[in-house]
Amino acid sequence: MQIEAQSASPGPLRLRAPEVLQAIGARAVRQAVPLAPERQAELEGEAGRVLAALLAHEPEGGLAGCLDGALLPGRVRADVGLVEAGRLQRKFGDLEALPVFRALQGLRAELKARCMGGPAAARHWWDRLPWAARPLVETQAGADAPQRLRDALATLDHACESVRTELAGLELTRASLWDAMQQLAGAIHFAQVLDERLRIKVEVLRTSDAQRAGMLDADVLQPVRRDRQEMLAQQVLCTNCYFAIEVLKKTGQEVLAACAQIAALLQDGEGAQVQQALQALDAMEAFRAEAASAMAQNAAMLGELSSGRVLH
Image (tube, rainbow, N blue to C red; front, side, top):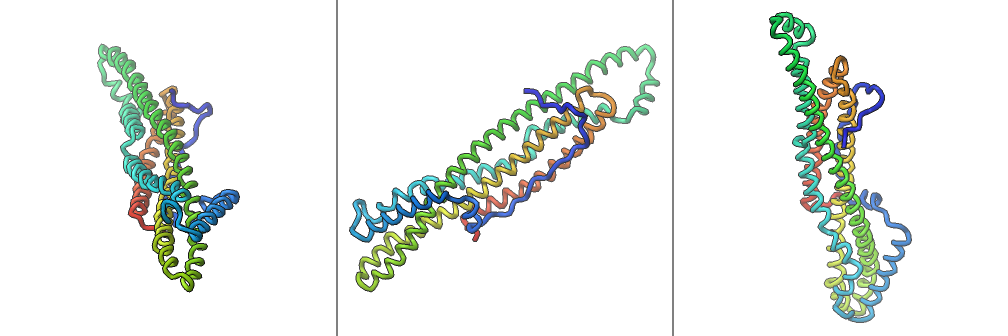
């Protein structure tokens, strides 16, 4: 696949630095991952049925077994955020080493070598050559320079294709994360509703059946609260990973757009457009350093969340 060159004469390259993310806490996550009212009603009905079974008799499979059906989806997805956070941290850390940036650096070096000294110096060097040597030098320079430029652009094209592949993979990861976030949100809502309703029932039971109240508190209420806290921690991590993927996607799209603009400038490979391409490549080099700094901060934020601390 060829780098998509722009049809119009491109202007100065403008790059937007990647966003440095602020961690989204547990309270904000509840708004970031809303449940449809129908799904909330379904989960609340399920919590009511589980509560009735817990209060009426000893359920088959024990008290804890009675909860598994509703909490299992959240438990199954509980490690998704941790896994994806690790992957994203590596992607953030590898940004500067991406092949596309190495290809841009190679192209920049080739253009700088071609333009070194400027037109006046080149003319002076040419005037000092013996007449007999000029045809050979001219032939060699004419043969090598365009081929080196074509090779550098082909390397850049291949590197851009790897960026497109990475962007497609990020989109799949984002979809998987959203699915996990929805399942976690459902399990968290179920646990919260059951906690609120069961806590009231346990307090009432303490006056009439203290033993039963104590068993429900120890075997159901406390485990539900622990599960909910763990799932909430994972929901926080998943949500922050979701927004971190958006930053990576925007950065990749920004790089692809810049490469297309540079390729458009170098279609002819002569004159003022080469100087514009060099300016664009200089801007990309500054962007690379700025992006690496922002991504390092985002990686540190995900690393802190991965330690298990829930932000309120």
